Structure formats: structure tokens, C-alpha cells
Length: 284
Image 1 (cartoon, rainbow, N blue to C red):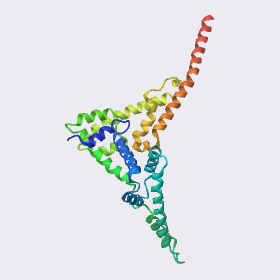
Image 2 (cartoon, rainbow, N blue to C red; image 1 turned 135 degrees about the vertical axis):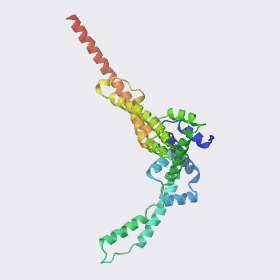
Image 3 (cartoon, rainbow, N blue to C red; image 1 turned 90 degrees about the vertical axis):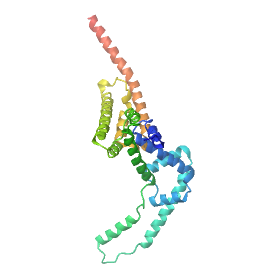
Image 4 (cartoon, rainbow, N blue to C red; image 1 turned 45 degrees about the vertical axis):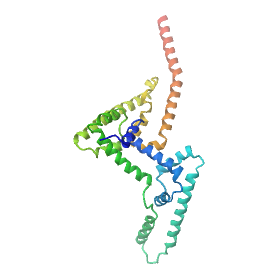
């Protein structure tokens, strides 16, 4: 096996925290939306795809608006495409209205429910979110490449070093990679690595909880300060990155620092009180 563009992308995925495959997919999707907003707003084929899918899923619509807020804050791009999608939706509803016919008096409720269900189904999107489709295809490709590279005689050692130095795979992509293993030994090695990473993460989460107990409240937070976020990311994967997880981590860190500062004088007073009591006992 030779190194190529896929290897470069996968290696880049290991350069950030979290699941490397999640990182690759997220980077690719961000590039897609940046290109879409800059070059593809008026592309007729892209417009037809989005009309069939009625836009994007909730997660990718939020990501589109987030990227646009940073790069094109006037939101002219999204307004242009949403205008087109709304007009297409109007046409579909108008067409549905024209086909409606009054029910005959003899029609039964069950028969009408079948008709109503068919009408509702006809208004569903004709295809899924195009970005989800692209991510699914890329996800499958990178999972297969990761497994084959991890156990490749020539490139395996370098890939293992990258893997061991990372947070590991999220649960979803661990399952996906297991499905691409060629032997029980390969599955066993993946599971062993992830068990070690889970054990370390559980320990950090436990330490985070312990330091919130009153008797350990004086202990300063270390690496475990964002263990709760890494645990969430380990289980849920890339979707959390679109939910402003980094902002939540920053807010949590600022709160913990404020609490540490606020508790410092109290701790100092407790120590001083203890010294005064000791001196009083000695004098008596």
C-alpha cells in the first residue's frame, strides 16, 4: 500500500482532538459549505438536488448558517437558496391542493386515513440531505482505509503510532471499523486499544466528579477539566462539533476557574482558624 491523498487526510484527522474519522468528515463538510456559498449558490444542478431534498438536514443547515455567519455575515447566499426552496415548496403545496377532492358521504374514516397518508407521503423529500449522502460515502471509505492501513505491513506501524497517540475512535466509527476487519485478531486489537482509552477516560471523568465533592473542592483541576466533553464526544461523535461543544468547554473552564478563585479565600480562612485554635490549645 502506498501513501496518497487519503493517507494525508487521515493523518490530518489525527492532528485534532477527537475521533480522526469524525474530524475528516467535519473538515470535508466545512470545505463543501465554504465552496457552496462562494461558488455554487446559482448552480442549477445543485439547486435541483436541494429542491428534491428540501434543503439540508437540521445538523447541516445549522452548520451552513454558522459558516456563513463567519465568512459572509450578510447571509445573502443562504437567503438566495432558501428563497428558491420556499418557492419550490409553494409549488408542491399548490399542486397538492389542486388534487384534493371532497369525500363522498359514504366514505369511511379508515379509507380517508389511507388517502391522507398518501398525500403526506407525496410531500416528503424525494431524496435525503445531499451532505449526509456524501458523508456516508466518505465515512465508509475512510473506515475501510483506516483498518487496511492499520494492519498493513508497510504502513501499519506509523498508523498505530498515530492511533495510540489520539483519543481513539468514537463509538459509531469503532463499530464501522470492526465491520471492516479481516480477522478476529484484528477486531481484538481494535477492542484492546479502545478499552485502554475508555479506561483512561472513565478515570478522568471520575476524578472530575470527585473534585466537585466538598472535601476535595480545594484541589485544582488538571487535564480532567473537560473530561465530560471528551466523554460526550467519544459516545456521540462528530455531531457534537456542530453543537458548539468547544464553546461549552470554554464556558465550563471559565466557571471552574472562577469557583477555584472564590474558594481560595475560604480555604485560607479555614487554615488560619485551625492555626489559631492550635495556638489557643498550646497556651492553655
